[in-house]
Image (cartoon, rainbow, N blue to C red; front, top):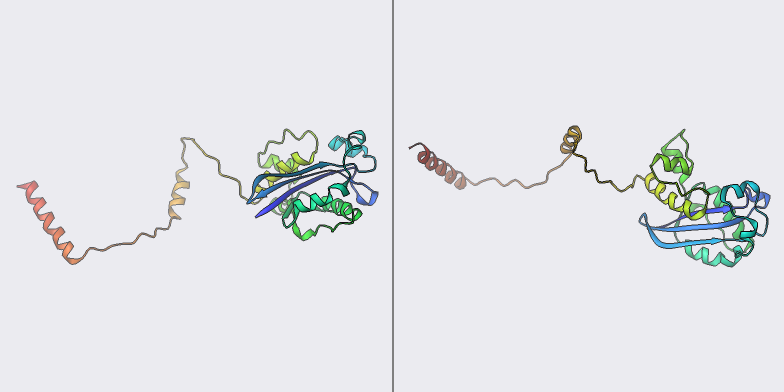
Length: 222
């Protein structure tokens, strides 16, 4: 099953205040394994970046001024996510901005039913705990040292690892320690179910076995 890890960066928080997308990052997963297929672009938002947003991602108005506008990449973006489940951390934020851009470009909006919000997964798994991306990276011991700024592709890479952990699909680590938890081994052994077929000897085979034992005893004692 193919899924898309998606993240966006914007000029500000609210679509209602006219804020727009400045970056889109997508990483494709195939059965939870990242493929080489990515979608990434910086966008000219056709408005100024707010000071708070600039502090978060660091994309200046000058840097974005010569980038493509959303309507120029809309079809490529829609083709990339087509028929795939979309995984987002705080989906309401990203989907509201994406659907705003798609509406402006005259394109079909993304159906929220096709998205999975890892914020909801984390909230259900760890009620009452911090569930920001950084907090989840810390919980799952995922190295997020590259995340000096909130950039879409780096956040996608981290979210892919967080998502796998939230699904309890983390790959097992090899443990070369000499210490063995005996209680754990005994518990595992109790849960083992054997399905070997039991073959019973015939009466003739039993008689032959008794004769063999008599001969063997005579040989050893006489």
